[in-house]
Image (cartoon, rainbow, N blue to C red; front, side, top):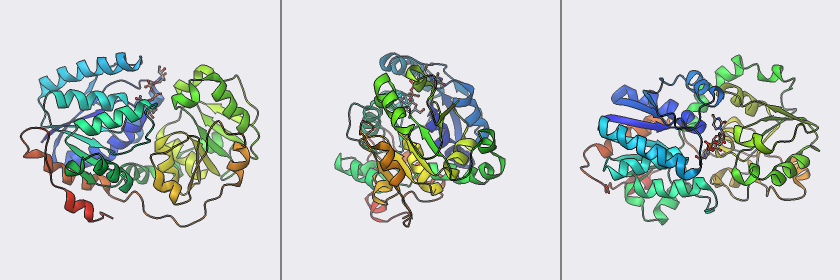
Amino acid sequence: MRVISIVGARPQFVKLAPFSRELRKYHEETIIHTGQHYDTNMSELFFKQLDIPEPDINLHIGSGGHGAQTGKMLSALEEQFINLSPDAVVVFGDTNSTLAGALAASKLHIPCIHIEAGLRSFNRLMPEEINRVVADHTCDLLMAPTRTGMNNLCNEGLEQCSIFTGDIMVDAVQYLADKAEHESRILEKNGLQEKSYYLLTLHRPSNVDNAEQLRYILAQLENLDQPVIFPVHPRTRRFLPESVENIQFIDPVGYIDIISLQRNALKVITDSGGMQKEAYVLGTPCITLRKETEWVETVEAGWNLLLNPAGDILCKQIQSFSANGKQPDIFGNDVAARMVKELGRIESVPSRRVIINVKEDYAKPSF
Ligand code: UD1
């Protein structure tokens, strides 16, 4: 098959890495980068560290309002899809690049696969929630990373085209975990000791697009009992104060360094979806500064604590949270291999909406 993979933002590069490696053993792949993320340490560095082939096409769309950014992507992707006439398009996650890829492919009747399907926060104020719902209802083959994701798809009547595959991010973490252990110098570089610091990341609009909310969170975390290291996402810079006692601001880091920072942290404090999973896989307790999460299994397992970022005793709750219980296997293993095997389902299908009976697979756990 000739497959086009669409990526644009940091978490998608991480998912693309293991998928692309496996896909290229059996199929022909073209990578299109929308250019949503363009800074070297938000994009190029990830391609390098995760050994992802250079994108064949970069659309250089860059930043903009949601409508403008998605609209430009939609129009540019449509042109590429018409030129390249692929057998299938693959989109990942929930960004504006995912939405544009799914819409452009479905309008051209090109079979489209959504990796990391079925996640729901049930909060339509999140731009990602809209992107997920639209991608799931326009794509033809939906690959769910968790049982909860699969249940959500079934509840929305999408069971016939959905498969429970496990989470591909696990493959990426495992690929780089040893390398991170041996090659990362991020702890020394920032004067950090193993298990004696908190790792903080924030980039959700609800936490960082409002100066008062962002400053409130930082003022709470300033009182933590150990130092905090905070790689700052470009979006978060706008309302960031000059400095905060006990919190060290650094530029965004590459994947090897973020894995090392997560593995060695006492606790991870974040509003990122990917880091809730990575912290779990690396065995570090996580505190999620949001009112809801898509990764409910990590909360149920006792390794992820959801805290309302507007709450008033953040510091105390973070310090007293411990997660030493057993870790059930939530995300699976060798997920890329399973995904690429399942891609074949789409090959013989002439047009959308593809009806693929995968009920049987759902009944059988894959791990
Ligand atoms: C996007 C995704 C989000 C994902 C996140 C990961 C959407 C709606 N959101 O959010 O789901 O979790 O990526 O990082 O697609 N910027 C730079 N340099 C860059 C990239 C962005 O300076 O390389 C700046 C932009 O100018 C903009 C801001 O960061 O002001 C936000 O970038 P954008 O891609 O719109 O969304 P994210 O907040 O990164």
